[in-house]
Every structure is written in C-alpha cells, then in structure tokens.
Image (cartoon, rainbow, N blue to C red; front, side, top):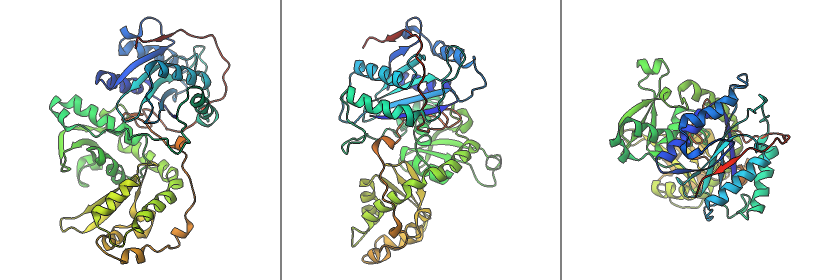
Length: 418
C-alpha cells in the first residue's frame, strides 16, 4: 500500500474534486466519520460546513486541509468493507481518529485506491501539528496496516500501480464548457500535484500526454504580458479543440504566478532522481547498434520514460524533453546531459555505431549515483487536484506527518450500505 498526504489550504477543493468523481460515476462515498445524520442525504454544502465550522475556530492556521490517498497493488481486489476498515485503522494511527473525515472509493485507475478528506483543526480550536506527519506517523501506520490486512507491501519488488491519470475524453466536448472544464481539471490535478517540472514547456510535455495543453499566447499579446494562462483540450493531431478555460477558473488556481513558485521548488525536488533517469536512458541507447526514432521511443516507454521531440516544419529537431513516469520528474534533454540535447538526438536517431561511440561512459555517466526509489516513496494521486489542485488548493504535497496526539472521545462513524 502506498499512502500520500497532500497538505493544503482548501477543503472545498478537496470535496469538490471527490464529489465530481461521484457524480461522474468514478467514485463512491463509502464512509463518513464525525458527521451527524445520514451522510447519503447531505448536500455538498452540508459536508463543507461541517469542516468549515472547525476551520473557522482557528483562522490563523491557513494550511489546514488534508487530502489523503491510499493506493493498493494492481493485483489486489479489495471490498468496500475492507477499505472502510483500512481507512479507520489508518486515521487512528496517524492521530486523526477523532477528526471528521470522509472516505471515497475511486474506480478511475487500473489499481484500487481510496481518498480521504479531513482537516487538522480540532473541536476545541487547537491544531494538529502536521510537521513530518508522513515520516513519523504515516509510514509506520502504512507498514502496520499492510501486515494487519495482508496487503501487498509497497517495498516488495512485485508492487505495481497502474497509471492513474486518464487522458481528457474528446467525446465529452459535446457536453459543453462544464464537461470540458472537468476533464481538464482532472488531468491538471494529476499532473501538477505529482510531476516535478520547471517550466511551462516541461509542464506541457506532460499535459500533452493526456490531451491537454497550457497556452500563454503570443509574446506580444496582452494575455502574455499580463501573465495570463488558458488550458485547452487537444485532438489526436495535437490541435486545440473545445472551449479554452482560464487558469483562474479552476479551483486549484494553476496560474502563471502559482506555477512559477512550483517551478522553483521542483528544481531542487527533482535532483535526486536525475541519475536514475540517466542510467535508464543509457540502458536503452547502449543496447542498440542502430537506432530509429520509433525504436528509441518504444524502448524508453518500456523503461517508464516518455520522450517528447519538438521539430520545425523542415523536420529539424530543436527540443527534447524526457518524462520519467516512475519518479514523476521532467527534464529537458540538455539539462540532463549534453548527450541528450536536441542536437545530440538528431545525430543519434537513424545512425549506427555512432550511437555507441557517442554514448561511451563519460564523466557524467561515471558519476551516476546508485540511488533506489522505494515504492512507498513514489507519489500517486488521481487525476484531480490530488488529485486535483495546485499548492494553493491542495497545497504542498510533502510526505510529512504529525506527532502522536492524545486521544479524545470517539465520534460516531457512519459507513454506507455497500
């Protein structure tokens, strides 16, 4: 089991994402803890008010919303009743057993998983400390639950999660702006919250894998000068279709200003994964005497890497970006090493033994770090802002967790009929 906690500022955004999934038939509300009355009969506003009643008690704490996802191995078939028990055990062990929380079972990916919405503000007006909650509490809880419920361990070599971000469905465009917005929002949340990119170009390299693109307009346009940004869906040929949506219209607020803050953080966060990506690229490049573009892209895909090549109308390659889906990092080829720049790839593709000569271990390859990415260190969140939102909405997705909390009297839990 892989657990991820996204700490942010908007419980509204978290609820909105999950409730949208329910309305689309891609999720089901399976448990509510700390709610009075029948949860099935509650509206969105009823659920939101329950949390806001607490957050209003301590307005000085802005980062008070938690969006938790528990993800299981793709081979596991877990009943909703078992998911309820797992969610209850997990929340107890991380110190949130007495907090109100809602559990949603999602069915929008190849592996089974659940999402939990809650807040860190307590009934008495106190605030649960979220510092290092991931390392100190979530990790021990995750490992204990794997044993208690006989789950596939995240550290095991066989643990596998299927990709969780679904491409925007072009058929949904006919249903108008709201459907288009929802489609784009799902992709945005999955990409923005999980992948580490450092520019709009790198962000677009990932978004385009899921039929979405971000557009700032021409450099001499008013939109560009005012740091505007719109998102559009793409057809199979990469052409924009449907209604473009302003970045400010999404709950996550994936605007230029917010993305630029993320760019800076990602420059440091992605560094530990650089050597692993280089090693996997070289594993492909050194394997073949001859290399074509299709062979290169196909073999990299087997390594969990997407290669995005940009070329002009004359067919000259002027850009290359590597997307590492394993570690969720994005690098421009030249930022990895000069051997993976656009010019270098132009020389390699279609050549023969020049490939091996060009890629002989250099200083860069001789300094590879033997890093291992543990399965539980991977991040995964469904296409939402968490699923679905930027740092302003779901905040920083730091695997951090909190100290032990003295237990208060238990609140009533209501599990839904399954």
